[in-house]
Picture 1: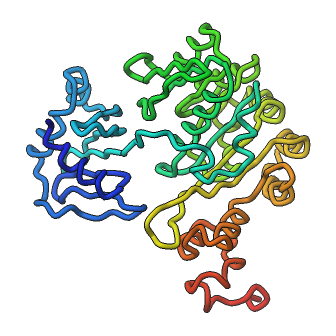
Picture 2 (picture 1 turned 90 degrees about the vertical axis):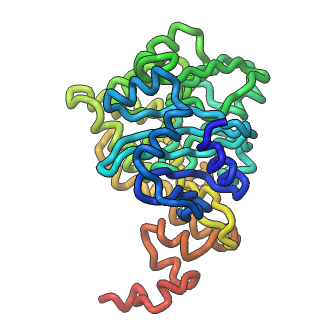
Picture 3 (picture 1 turned 135 degrees about the vertical axis):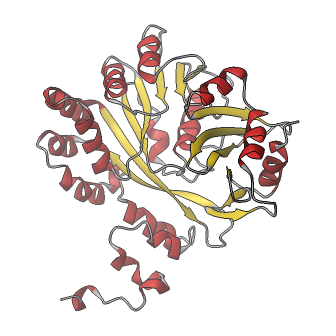
Length: 363
């Protein structure tokens, strides 16, 4: 058993989401969003490199020696599954291990808005799940794929970097392919997937213009495409996609977004009132004619007002979702308000804003 498994076992036993290893400090665990050190000595460069070396294949070791970062899945001796990133920095080697639950949580268990289940019933178009790193995008996508797997007899091709949740085919056939192991890039994986009779394609990350373009083509030609972006609102997501493509393709891209983008779900993870867990809180944009027109006329700055008024379609601003979660006592108000855009409406729920001037007192 690799020596690093002892740290991973400890983290799993305490319900931690991540293990961080870096030279010059002890191992760190992330517990409900906060980092805490393990009672252990500061790690040396040679020591940590030897720990990491025990879990790498020869090809991974060669890749890392050439100065490249590594992303891969690792199953510990205790059976836990982890997404791993290994990197070099100024003081030496570093690594982050993200725990992957063995059971895929359902849409209901994650507390996602009911509209998310309805989005999975579409047969064509694009759904984007967005948010900062570590906000649970992969878990949300896994729950959506599991719902599709349980309810529809379709061919699902999942392109991931690396494979995190392992799906077993139920009603659907699920083909999981890993970047670097089964395919050289997401764009190449998409190109190949189009020849493999897919109904649903999941793209782990729309990280470059070629991948975005290929995903758009797949969505326009009769497939349901699920993907992620590191954006923090529906408006920023639209702008990011448009800006990612060459100028001469901007009008075509806006037309695609107006006609074939189904929805954008943007999420944050907020601590529970007892500080012993976190739950997803989501902004939801469902593209209707009004939002499509705003996209086509470069008025994306007006999208938030549409989300605010689109409750009947399942839409909501992040601030609305945060406020509802606070009122339902599902999240810690102090943590929730840190994600809010307009903090004034949260004043009655948080002590941090208790002394803040009221809107009519700001002059």
